[in-house]
Length: 118
Image (cartoon, rainbow, N blue to C red; front, side):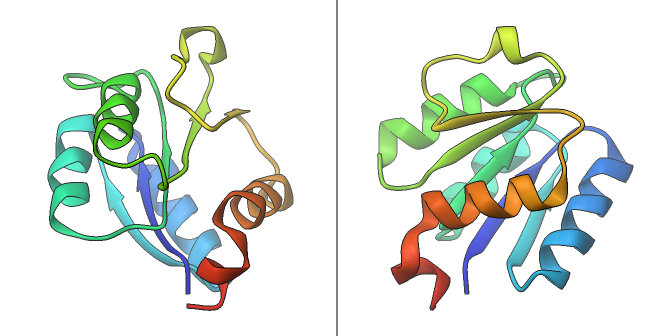
């Protein structure tokens, strides 16, 4: 099962992502900021990270750079209303609002069959 860290400072977006991704069969942990996500990422092995970019404190770009400085094998998706602010550390940029199936397709593409079968 693919373990996903979903990060957004908007509570209802985090909750919606958690419900939708869990119902689709993914294991989901959420964080409300880049700094909380960095702490969680450093404590747990995740297969994929989905993050907003514009968040107070440590933003999605800082989170993506942190992850990529540790390992290039964990894909990072920017799910944002500010696509023009996305740095080069993201594997994919998905504009808000996104259709759930589009997100599922990107997750499946980036995580690969070896992760999907975990």
